[in-house]
Image (cartoon, rainbow, N blue to C red):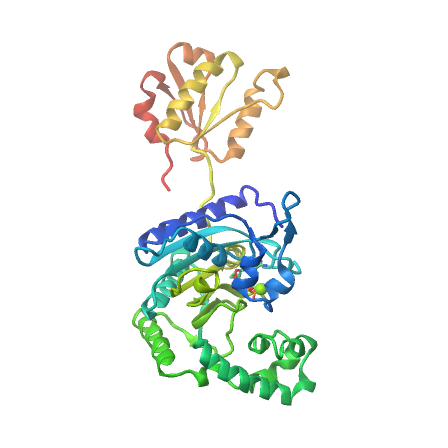
Length: 421
Ligand code: ATP
Ligand code: MG
């Protein structure tokens, strides 16, 4: 679990800001659900024999009432719970997005943390492939907006439950024939969750997994039509995709379209975003059956990729550093600074770390002003202020030019202090 500190936190805020604006343009609305949910929600929602439920959840008993609770390992289950609890689909479908921390007890490594952050988009109450495509276009647009390149889109269709059942049987038969080649994990899953065996990261099982029956070959005409329509919309939008018949995703709740955005630039944690359709989850969680589709992206991985691609994110620097030579000037200086801030100027005021030496020497104040990155300093010197003036000193253009500005009209010239962008 990481502390996210300035100046790095500015990258987070920048990314979150981009996402908010983009979600607005797709008319997705923000939802905020609790970080803790009843354990049963995840067990029922994600599936009992998934990695997350089997070994990654931070679960505990509420000491006051014995309730079984879990720090959310993902947010879809909570969003669905909220949608059901508040009858949000009563008047038709809803498009929602969230951002926030998730918790999984995994082995920490690059791009894999125990508290990590996801941004997710969910469209609930819509059955058609156009919404699958819309969500994929939304993510694709985000990469464009962030200036991220070299991510590929992998698609698959998991079909419908009956189709999966037929495939599952074929898969079990096939894998059972080669049981001696399976690792321990796969053997354990053979009869509980054989589909997940296809998702194995064990290199020694690649060959057997490559030759396994493919779910995509078990799809009926309706599932195929749904998948084709998604692909056609993506193609019409110039979005490139490949079908990866082994893409199964980590939760049990998916059906039909599943997808991942993957990069080769982050080592083995290359999936930056994943999602799919989950038409049976709402009913599973106790609501009236309704279709849904969504995705989640990992913020840490996206930020890491931005760094990898040397994408420069605007740094947060104040417009003005306020130099206050003596404590007597503070009341007036702070009243002026407040007017500047009200006018949209960002001002970092000098503050003494120790008042035994007053506000500190001018030299040390200017050193701080330089370090702050501010474009200019305003100096509230006693002589000038008594004449109703403040000194403006340029800090970045190399000139060091000083001019006096009248305090009486501060609101009028405040906008000239604002940096652009
Ligand atoms: P992986 O295969 O890498 O374990 P996952 O399938 O478990 O990923 P999802 O549950 O689909 O991941 O979550 C969506 C996204 O959240 C992932 O694509 C990834 O970017 C991010 N993510 C998942 N787990 C972590 C983690 N422990 N630390 C950082 N990011 C994560
Ligand atoms: Mg995982």
